Amino acid sequence: MKLTKGFTLIELVVVIVVLAILTVVAAPRFLSINEDADVSVVKGLKGALSSSFGIAYGKLIVDEHDVTNRVILLDPRDPEDAWCKPIAPEVQCSFAYGYPSSRGTIKSVTELGDDWNINQSGGDQKVFKIYLKKDADTTSTEGTYSDFSPLASSCYVEYIVDYTLGLELDDRIRIANKNCG
Image 1 (cartoon, rainbow, N blue to C red):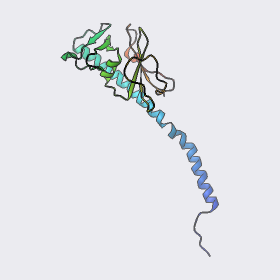
Image 2 (cartoon, helix red, strand yellow):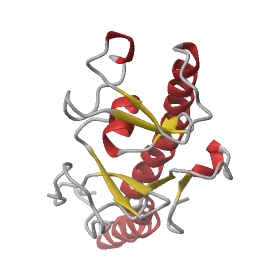
Image 3 (spheres, rainbow, N blue to C red):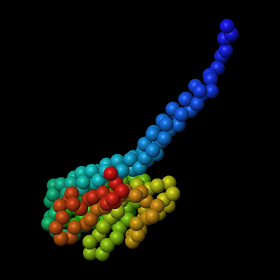
Image 4 (tube, helix red, strand yellow):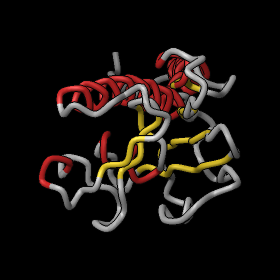
């Protein structure tokens, strides 16, 4: 009897078929991991915005600011208001009824880093779209925006500045895209 080493053709074909089946079943799940991660990041941002805005609202009350005013301006050069540091030191933090009403104030209150873009649109009712920058997204984080960047994630947080006191905070901050999970 002669001993031979190696695999038969049938064994090799069976292994290739099993690997092909595993690839077809597993690949779609691994391909959607980036999308799932983006959705999770945006959901986390929504929670962070709600918490940060609530803390800022409380801070305004503790500092004896009248949160029933339509517009509250804080000067970061004033030691009592130095906790709010917008984009530039000479720029004031602005609040509407105790909640942030400008890009600089949103960035200051939430301490958002350079990984995030904040686009502003709307007239009397400002709408801010806050989204995670992508590698290809070269949109500047400075200035006023009227358009939402087409390179942005398909999932973003929308924050509506309410000048009418008609919306609760939870209704002002929402994940605003049907593609989000």
